[in-house]
Image 1 (spheres, one colour):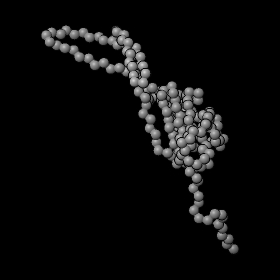
Image 2 (tube, one colour; image 1 turned 60 degrees about the horizontal axis):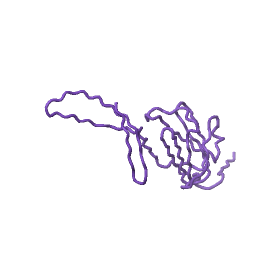
Image 3 (cartoon, one colour; image 1 turned 90 degrees about the horizontal axis):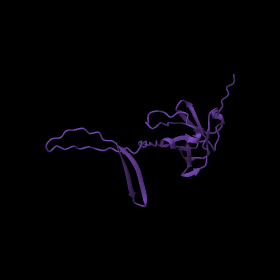
Image 4 (spheres, helix red, strand yellow; image 1 turned 180 degrees about the vertical axis):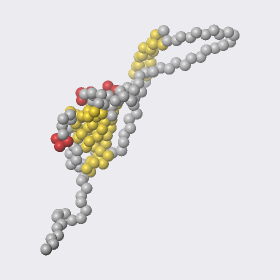
Length: 179
């Protein structure tokens, strides 16, 4: 097995240094004008996942938002279990401006106790997570949840709109029948 040092200089005064271990085991008997060719594959790490961003989901104002979050291990198939809040990073935006809402544990917090100003994180089954939050303003909300340990980011968007009004007159309609 041979050890090869690799140095590369990039534009902008950046430098990349890597130590690669390469092993070759070639046994062959060649006669005449024979030749051998080999292809070297270099793996620099696991491939970053492709992040799909779904379109904004329309939700009504004054309603709690509940959404599921999927986090996986390096293989991209095995669900990551017992992810602590400290292992995550949250960024929330309202109409393109960042709002500083913390990510807090939602374990044991009933839906009626979810309040504005926080995003609640819960593992409701082994490897299955959800977030809950109560948007306090109308507009386009975007929640980015990053899991740095496995290079994953989940992006969720919500279009918070005013509650639908009832069609017709406002008030009570009654009819009295005399018997």
